[in-house]
Image 1 (cartoon, helix red, strand yellow):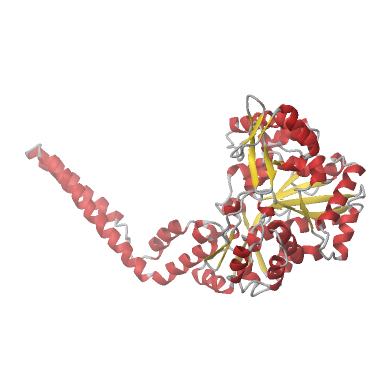
Image 2 (tube, helix red, strand yellow; image 1 turned 60 degrees about the vertical axis):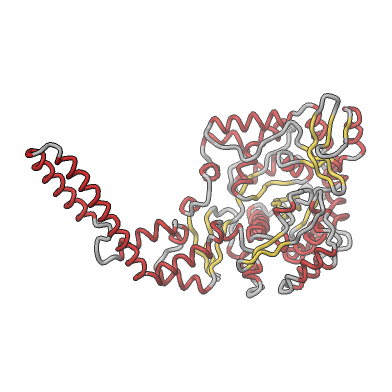
Length: 519
């Protein structure tokens, strides 16, 4: 696999907010704790206070979550290592996409594994464990119930509700599974041997990445939630996270940066089998939306104490939860994820939880042989791949035309004739000036129509070249979105089972450029 790198600001795919963060723009410094670079990890290590009790809880939860899953030696060693004060994690998180969903799911995990390796080289006295955080509590099924391969959408339709991790792989799923007979055996094994979606995702991610030492953590865990009880209560009663996040969001807005997430007065859902619904404050206490569940303040306090697992954080508090239950140093996410964390630093400061190093996952574009050839034929550089197709098309036709198809000189000459003649005619009869002006407008419109015909003729002559550009555009931006956000990994993995090893060799989590990878 051959790699080329393109600066992110040349791709047109990233917000100025995100680029400003990577460039450590001075006005954003109050909203993060550490610069996104390898040198920052020394101070992040020193800032991380994680007790032996917290480590014991984490290790016990991981051992419980991995029960029944044959553990590789490295997996067991990494779980056990978390009991040591010399071990830290680096984490990414994502929804439970079917068959991994879009490519960037893989990119996130590869970036995280590579960061752990890079940190070990930089700080050999410590141990670093890559972690994938399963978003098993998420309830937006429509976002994860499909994947796209070779332009076709494969979708599982289900009437189940609540946290998607609890969705049962029932008869409807078994029927769906029949439509993806081409899937690799490890996928089929993961799904056919599992009762729930969370169990299946753990199995296929484990199959793909266990040998790299990746640990898979499900935050939907009673003992882990118990350590979050203080935050749950303060959010429910005092609404402090809402206040802190709103303050930061307002300050960012004053600097011209739009909010990515929107805090609520209460940032928890009520979570039981089949239900994940927002909790709202009422005059008499608390209500769970779209249900008949109601609680007084004393009842909800008791519920937090006895059943913390029934409280599921939203996007505002999930990052804090993660950092409170992991000895974590860095979070790797997509561009929108990275910058929404900047709205949350005030919450971390309030609860005295160290803020991690925020890093973007690696960004990639995979080019098969056919499209590599088309790019070579069309004479594009790697950066040219990201240019706007219509802009390139207009400019290319102009440059390749054997004549001035815009007829600019002719328009100037014609306008000059009408202007001069109209001026002379006006000396004979003033009303003729308007007549000549109207004639000029009509004539210029005719020339414009001729120009359009000439352009179409040139486009026909250059059809093969233009079609190559259109094919490249549709390949790199399927449906108008970047390849990594649409295409499933199987599009490349089925022909190249070494794909992940090659990505591990190519990606560098501290190289903030687009990786154009030639397969």
